[in-house]
Every structure is written in structure tokens, then in C-alpha cells.
Image (cartoon, rainbow, N blue to C red; front, top):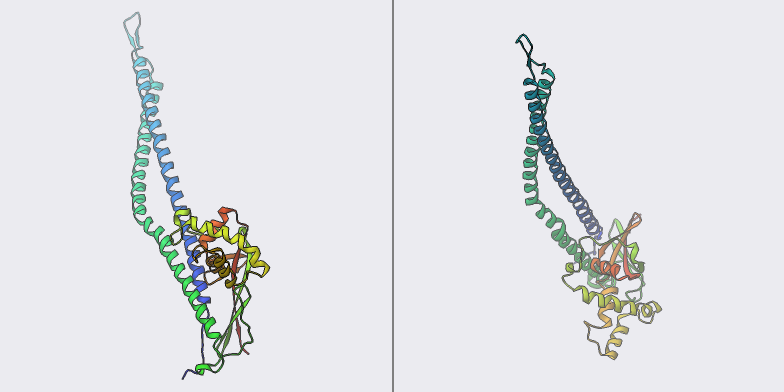
Length: 330
């Protein structure tokens, strides 16, 4: 016999989802910084090599000129009337030659060093390029899959919890706090209460129409090619149909799924192409879910819909805002 039904909360799933999001963002930023540094290093080394190659060429020209000047000086001696030969003073030309030789050697060493460093850097870049695809795959596809699994797990947990809370008191020997809740549509505010001997956890979910510009740009979506389960074109049609439905839903007339099932029946739509499918997608278990913390929203579910809606110019979307409150019992 089970004496009590004790369920935890999904806070750990939400926190883990947030950690994965921060991990993707931080590692993604780090990888972009590394690639920027790589580009900068390549460009800087290429510029150094070009610079010292030009200096080597210039030093060679200066050395050739210094040798010619010394030759001219040394052949400028003369004999006096007594037949004595007077050697010219070529100390200036000799010093100029020594300086030209020294500068050429210095430029050649600098050019050699730059090429050596270029070889080392290129080797390091090759090593990085072998590793970076795995890192990008880790923060891209694998992390996205992990986040998707967390969202699915959280959704299943909420379904189980809501079902558990609707079990009448006394059934199956379970103990729970009775609630006087009437059946509600998916547009009503809801409160799920966990009962345990030490803590009360409340799940508050409110449907709100949130300005699309207040939501962050979804991570991991760069183009319509990232749409896998549902194509971007199908999702566009759904978003356009939703905009037609929202006024009726807001008025209260279309605030339940049965209304849209009747519309589909009257207008001859099947489920996949009808109003009820759109209603279930945005107001049912697969609704867009976000949390709000420290003045900003965090997307839990619906990244593709949000990404596409932003680019379609949609102003508002129905969003399920999830709040979790934990209170110690006295």
C-alpha cells in the first residue's frame, strides 16, 4: 500500500537546460575568439614576412651601392709630379659597406624568424582544425539534442504530475491535498502543487501574448535549412494561420480545442492542415515555453517557431510562461 504520492519538481531540469544554454553560448564565443585570433595571427605573420622580405631586398640594393662607392673611392687615387701615388681616404665608404652588410644580415635573420614562427603557427592551426569540428559538433548538434530531450522529459513530467493531481482523494490509497478546481481550458492560468512532508512546490504556468522582440534570438538556428522535423514552409503556413485565429481565441469564443475541431469539420480540413492542429501546437502540450529570470526570457521550447516568426515580422506569439515556486512548510 502506498501511503503518499511524493513528486519532485522540474527545477533541476530547467537549471540543467540553462546550464547547457550557457555552455553553448560561452564555448561558442570562445571558439569565435580563437578563430579571430587565428586570422589575426596569420595576417600579422604574413605582413611581417612581406615586410622583412622587402627590407632584405632593400638591404641588398644598399649593399650593392656601398660596394660600388667603395670601388670608385679606391680607384680615385693619383700620382703626383714626383711619381708618388696618393691613396684616397675611403673610411666613409668602408663604414657604409659594413653597415649595409650588418643591416642585410639582420633583415635576413628577422625574415628567417618570421618564417619559422609561421611554420609553428600553421602547425598549431592544423592541430586546432582537427579538433574544432568535434567541439562545434558538441556545442551544436549534441547539446541541442540534449536540450531537446530535457524539454521532452519536462513536458512528460508535467503531464504525469497534472494527471496525478487530478486523482480523487482516497483513490488507490493516495493522500493529497484536495483542490476545488473546475475543468479549465489550456488558456487558463494553472497551478500544480507538490505535496511532501517538508516542502510545497508550485508550478505556475500562464499563457501570455509576448512581443516577439522581447524574446532572445534562438541559438543554433542560422537558416531555414536547420528545420528538420517540420519544414520552414509548413511552419510559415502555420504561423500565418495562427495570426488569423488569435482574435477569435482572445475573444474567448475559440479558447478551446473543440471549437477549432468544429471549424475544421465545417470547412473540410483534415487535422494536419486544419485549425485544431495549430491550436494544439501553440496552446497544447507543445506550446512555446519560456522562463523569465533576471529581466530576460529563456526559451525552453519553440525555438524554431520563434526564429521564423521574427523573420516573418510577426508581432506577438502565445507563450506559456513557466514559473516554479518552492516554499518550506511550517
